[in-house]
Length: 272
Image (cartoon, rainbow, N blue to C red; front, side):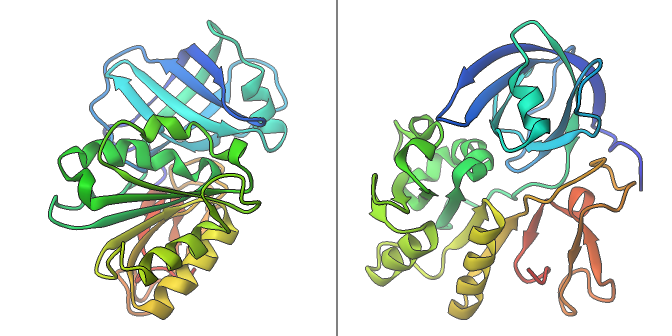
């Protein structure tokens, strides 16, 4: 514990692309110094600028896209001073990247129906996952929720295939009028989604808690990608504990580290 995984590295990289994405988010692409193997959906990286700034602790971000072996992109919402500093970076400037880190989603076999439930920038793990399910997109659903239509960040990146997409907005400006969990409930009641599907969720804590309660009450099999604050990303600081269940795979150990044991957990393994 406390060391980089064997396939991870930490290096200074260049910002190779930057694009505004909604009123308070952006896509950040970085150019790596050496090739990186294809990553699994839900793996993350720690990012921090190089040189003097207010951002002294790296921030964790799910890998959004991997255009090729030398580039990665991240979908980042500006929420505080740390993400603001990252937003001020321009193409050609440097930042420190540490990755790949964590355990992502295990891609389900093609004959398994899969449902992605995303809130805001919680769509980040599902672009890679949807591509990994390219031969089974007709059996793959994305329920993408946000407060407003303009906060369905980069939603058109998911267009163009057989992926079944249901949008949901709190104000009714796009798709279903309500949150993503309510939209899921409506899809289940209409039998457009099977209760035997595997449900995968990522988003803000309110969405994840609401979904976890709904899934447990309905007997659904589900996985959560937890958006937990992390100080190191490699298990040193113990700053990202997640309470475990007494009968799951962490039985006998009351806490798991989100960074090294997750960030993706089976709903049966965490008390969330």
